[in-house]
Each structure stands twice: as structure tokens, then as C-alpha cells.
Length: 534
Ligand SMILES: Nc1ncnc2c1ncn2[C@@H]1O[C@H](COP(=O)(O)OP(=O)(O)O)[C@@H](O)[C@H]1O
Ligand SMILES: O=P(O)(O)OC[C@H]1O[C@](O)(COP(=O)(O)O)[C@@H](O)[C@@H]1O
Ligand SMILES: [Mg+2]
Figure (cartoon, rainbow, N blue to C red):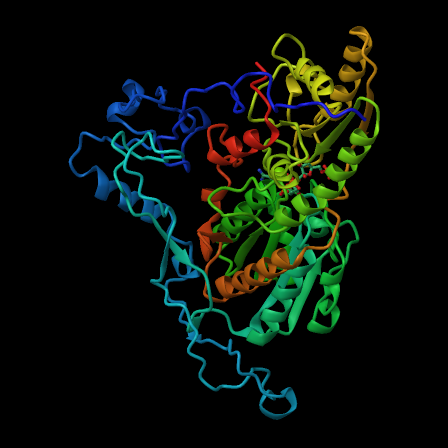
């Protein structure tokens, strides 16, 4: 094959045409989407930032920046938002007992007779007042790359969240606990690892009654689905395979029915593994339990390979999914590279967030065009994707496109269909890109060999890799610690490499998305060499 000289982009500049820099100028949480993306349009040379009249004086959290005390007020508000709901809020007289969690276990037959591990002191407890910094960069200017500012001057405001871990005092007697685990939504690598570690940790606390709820929230309906007794023995090897031991589902009964069912089964600790929808459900269950005066701890573990949960470094399974996507991308690359004028198209998951596509493209280094829902593009026209594909075929003989499932939905006919959970059923952008590419090359009279690969379910049905396995372990353990500490309506996450608890509403107020002005997206663009497609 003749070697062609290749410059990654038709423009003289290898990086796509300069965009106006975008700054998120308010705290993401609690901001409506319109406000959240309110941005300072600053020319890259401009030191000053025109934040628009709204942001000049009033932030989207309703903060009046003219008020000299806005900062302490903001911090107070932040603290109350991130305060963790606790059993004591409903049962003020609930008194704690010393923790039964101890890592220095003795052989059960000797010192374990009472059901608890050794009573030897283990000084590894978390203090209730321990905190983790949510934001760790002190931006000196709103024009600093990636600056997330609260006020127009980008003032440094410490934002602390609660540290996760075992407490010295607990609010549940282990022998009175009936713990249930439920996995909802789509699959994700690592679900079994989390289940395993929740069960193991519960047993270390001394809990004997542990059950799995089959097939997500549906398992709480009266559909004849029986709960699955869980123990260390049952879960010992479940992490060796993907999927969920308990099964998953979308949809399910109303919240009041779920809580009725929990009451009937006497469940007073519920561990909920799922994404945005599942967490909305978990929070509603938590509120319903409070309304009914039930002493129940509801704790979430965020599960989404889309990585679209707010405030966390990442969610479990994401790394595995990205790694697994490499296989599909590499196959597409080999197919494309081996064919005469070969074009590979790979569709990856990502309903509204393009994290998997972006990270997989970046990791592979084999993608020429990455299309994600957050970045609009034209397929046709002088700046469209197809024109660029022609350029790539002429210049280097092959090309590989990675498209996230939620990208380019405007080009497709809307089905208006929803799945059982109420999520919009998307049309297939991968097939569309494939078909339009075929048509385009036929029209312009250039032969092209287009191969479409859709590894959608393969990347989420696999077993967690080692680093996700460890993440799942820590999250699962911390979920149990949170419940025993008396918290409810919380979820657990990794934040700046530390493990923390968040009140559920703070992490699901909207799906986390790729910022098209982030340095990561720009890194992806430098890797693909793609221009703007608008
Ligand atoms: N707003 C909501 N309130 C209560 N339950 C919800 C809500 N949205 C979704 N659910 C329930 O959560 C479960 C999982 O939701 P789904 O959107 O399918 O997955 P994910 O949790 O991964 O986002 C389903 O059983 C669904 O019925
Ligand atoms: O075919 P299913 O089960 O609806 O799953 C498809 C969906 O799963 C996801 O990967 C993850 O969705 P959830 O977080 O809601 O499970 C989406 O990107 C995708 O649209
Ligand atoms: Mg979801």
C-alpha cells in the first residue's frame, strides 16, 4: 500500500478551530441546566470576563455577590445541603451502641460465639466530623482552564463533604437488622463485586438476615419473586463473573408499594445499586419511610457505566467499560485499515453523556472522529463529518469513527417511545452514520468499505477489572458503614480519591455531562485531530 503523507486535520492548525472558552460560573448542584451552562464568553486573549448581567451580581444559587457576607452565607447553605439525613432526625431519642465492626476477627468457634467479631479495640474509625474537600483547585481567574467559579471573581470557597467510613457508634443492633440489596437499571461491570462486599461487611457487623431482591424494584412487587438469602458463602465467588447475581430491571411498582413490601418483609436496611433513576427511587423510598416513621436506612451505591452521576471522580464499571471498548475500537481499526478505503464505525453507550466514547477514543488513539451528545455536529455539508471522512480516506486510506449512542439524535426520527423506567428510547445513530456514509461515498463516486461494530452490551456485561473491583469493594463497605452509622437517603462515592457520603438529591439533580470546553475533550480532539463539524 502506498504511504501517504498525512496531517491529521485539513486546517493548518492540528487542533480544531478556536472556540470561545466556556466557564461554568456557578456551583453545578442545584443549578437548573440553563443556569449551569451559563458561561463567560471570553476571547482567549481577554483577561476580563463578561459574565452577563445576571451573573455579575447574582449567582444561580440565588447568591447576591454584592452582599459582603455572601461567602459565609454560601458556605452555610452548602453545609446544610450536604448535611446527611440521619435516623435521629426522625427518632431524636435513638441512642447509639458501640460499633460491632472490628477487623481483628477471631475464629468464629472461639470468640465469635455471640455473633460478633472479636471485641478487641480497632482504632480505625472515622470521626463524624471528618470532611473531604469537594473542589481542590483554587482558580486564580475565571479564565483559568476548566475554572469552576461561584462568583465573578472566582473567589476561593471551601466546600466540605462528609467522609465515608466506619463510625465508633452505630444506630442498629446487628441482630435486629434485616438487610436487603437490590440492583436496578442496566447492567454494569462490578455489580457483583459490590453485592459481595456489602454482604461480607454486613456479616462482619454481625448481621444474620441478608437478602437479595430479585430483578430490581420489580422484586418488591407481588409478582411471585422471592427474595434470595445471602451470605459470605453465597457471594464468595460472584465477582468472577459479570452481570448481577440478583438480576436487574427497569420499571417497577410505585414507591408506596415498595415500602409496603419492605414493611411486610421487615427490611430495615436497604442497599440500592443503580443510576440516576434508581437513586431517585431510593430517595423516594427514604422519604416514604420517614413519613411512615420507620427506622430504615436507605443507602445507594451509584452504578452507571455512562459515568453520569454528579460530583464523583468516576463510578464503578466505567474503567472496565472503557477498557472493553478498546477491543471493539481495535477491531474496527484493523478492519478499516485492512480494507481498501475502509471506514470503521463503533457505537458506544452514553444516553446523554459521552464519557465512554471520549475516554475510549482517547485511550485507543485509533479514533479519527469522536461524536458525543454534548457536542453538536453536521453530518453533511462543507464542515460535516462525511466531508472529513472523504478527506481522511484521501489522505490516509482509512478512518475510524466512534459515536456515542445519544449523539446526533436530531438527525433521526423520534420514536417518542419510552422504556419501563421512563427513559426515552433512542434511535440508532450508529446505523444512521453507517448508512449516510455509504450513501455519501456512492454519490461522490469513491469506493468505501464501511464496517459497523456495536459492542453496546459487551462492554457492560463483562466482569470488572482490577481497579474497578477495588473501587467496588470500598464503595460496598462504605455503604454498610453509612447505614450502621444511622444515615439514610445517602449515597457513596469517590471524590478527589477519598470516599465520601452525599445526600442523594445532590448527585442526581441532572446527569453529569462532558464539558465541550474541558481540557479532557480538547485532549480527545488533539488525539483524533478532528475539526469542528459545524
Ligand atoms: N424519578 C424516579 N422516581 C422513582 N423511581 C424511579 C425514577 N426514575 C426511575 N426510577 C426507577 O429506578 C429504576 C431504574 O431506573 P433506570 O432509569 O432504568 O436506571 P438507572 O437507575 O440506571 O438510571 C427503575 O425501576 C425505575 O422505575
Ligand atoms: O438496553 P437497556 O438495558 O435499556 O440499556 C441501554 C442503556 O444503558 C446505559 O448504558 C446505562 O443506562 P442506565 O445507567 O440507566 O442503566 C445507557 O447508556 C443505555 O441507553
Ligand atoms: Mg439512568
